Structures are given as C-alpha cells and as structure tokens.
Amino acid sequence: MTLTLTRKPRFSSRWIAASALLIAVLLAALVSGDLLLSPFEVWQALTGQAATFTETVVLSWRLPRAIAALVFGAALGAAGAIFQSLTRNPLGSPDIIGFNTGAYTGVLIAMLVVPSLSFAGTAFAALLGGLGAAAVVMLGSARHGLGGGTFVLTGIAVSALLGSLNTWLMYKTDLGTATTASVWAAGSLDNTRWPHLAPALIALLFAAVLTALVAPKLQLLALGDDMAKALGVRVGLTRLALIACAVTLTAVTTAAAGPILFVALAAPHLARVTLPRAQPTLAAAASGALLLGVADWVAAHAFAPVQIPVGAVTVSLGGAYLTLTILLRKR
Image 1 (cartoon, helix red, strand yellow):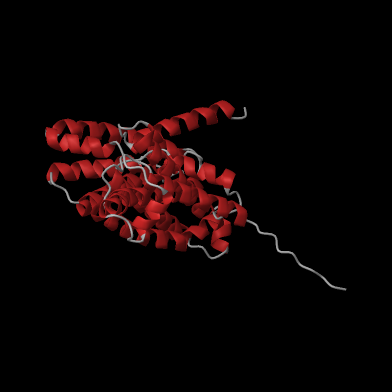
Image 2: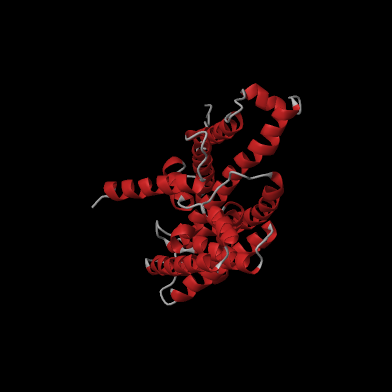
C-alpha cells in the first residue's frame, strides 16, 4: 500500500498575488509621468542600457519616490498592526492615537529653534515628539492599561491638544518656516530623492529588524498577561519594546514624508481580509505598502499636470473607508 502525501499550499497563492500587485504598482510608478516609458525602457534604465536622460528620470526621480511609497507604507502598516493588537481596538493606530501629531509637534518646535533643519534633525525631532506623545498617552491611561477604549480615547484627547499647540506654533513662527512646515504637514513624496531617502531607509531597516524580533510575541500577548507570563514572556518589557518599534516606524516615516494619515489604520484591516492566516504584522506591512503605493500614484498622475500631496489622497480614502465601515457595521 502506497501512501501519497499532498502538501497543500497555505499562503502561497495569496502572497504571490500580493507580490504581483506590489510589482505592478512599482512598475506603474516607473512608467508613468510626462515622459511615458515602456516596461522595456524602464528595464534598460535599471540595467544602465538606456539614454542618459531616461536613466535620470527613472533612477534619480521616479525610483526613489516609488520605493519610498512602498517602504513607508509598509512601516505605517506594521505600526498600525502593533498598536491595534496591543490595544485590542480597531481604532488603535498611530494617527488616531496622536503619535503622528506628536511627531509633527516635535518637528515644529525644532524648526522654531533651527529654521534650516537637516533631515537628521527633522527625524530626531519627530522621533522625540512621537515618543513624547506616546509617553503622555501611556501615563494618562496607565490606570486602565492598553486594552479597551481608554487608551484610544486618551490618545484622541492628546492628539487634539497637540493639534491646538501645533496651530499656535504655526502662528508664532515666521512666514518661511510656516510655509515649509505646512508643506511638510500635508504629507508628500513629491520631492523624494536618494540623499533624503537613504537615511530614512537605514533607520527603517534597523527598526524593521527589531520589529521582526519582537512582533511574534504579539500573538502571545493576545492570550492575556497571565498566559503570556506563563509562557515566558516579559510582558511589560515586551510591550515597551513593541511600542518603541511602532513609534520609531511612524516617526521616521513622518520625518521623511510628513504625517500620512489612515494608512496605519486601514492596512491591518485590509490584511485581515486579504491575508487572514499570515503573520499579522507582516501582512499589514504588505497591505500598507500597497495602499500607499496606489495612493501616491493617484496623487502624482490622476490629476495631471497638477500633483497633490499623497496625504490628501490617504485622508480621502480613509474618510471613505471609515464611513463605509460605520454604514456596514452590524448592529
């Protein structure tokens, strides 16, 4: 008697489809624009066989922006998955809780002190602002913990207060700094180039490695503190490490592109539908990359020759998403 075992692929088809979509979004970003290119011309530019101008368009202008959209979207998606898992709340994302607003506050204060702020200074200020907002929210909800609605409500309140502070800071600064801050606050990838993108990619790579090490423990924390402790998880330290990773992912992205809202909120929800059995943080990262990649293509080309900030597109999509979610919610 011969026993034949057939191994059924669990996630391969869905991951292949997700990978194909990401490649399609990347290719669309590289071929589209005032200079329309074919996929073959893009390949020639990538391999150094195209004309000088074509190589400049693809390698220096379009490629860094396309990579930024995918990488920043992945970072925001992963951060959203971490916060939604820790808070056990579908609204527990950095932009709703207020960490994006805190990062913006940090950048505004730094711009008031040093008007010509470098990327490293902007990133550091955004990181401090995000961590500061995180600390305030955690202290404000310490009595009730991260679970339930208290943490999210505290975050919304802190976000509102920081939003008011940001408005006051904008009025206190000079016109040039205010204009720069306003453009940054819209959330845009228009002028993304390698000199600005490279430091962000290095910082996000470091944060991604740390996130990959601690993210698997999210599923253990979901079992409850007592069970997680019984399984050997240092609950308090693990939570702090996860929050630090999520805030870092958000702050670096915010420093490089400005506050891009709703990607961190929507990506984990999309991941649960499209990649339901995959590791949640990884699935949310893939969904976030796809969301921001599509949104940036829309921002760059849907209203040509006018380009709009990608933050405006994600806010519009996020508002429609929340409205649809409320309308379809089972009572």
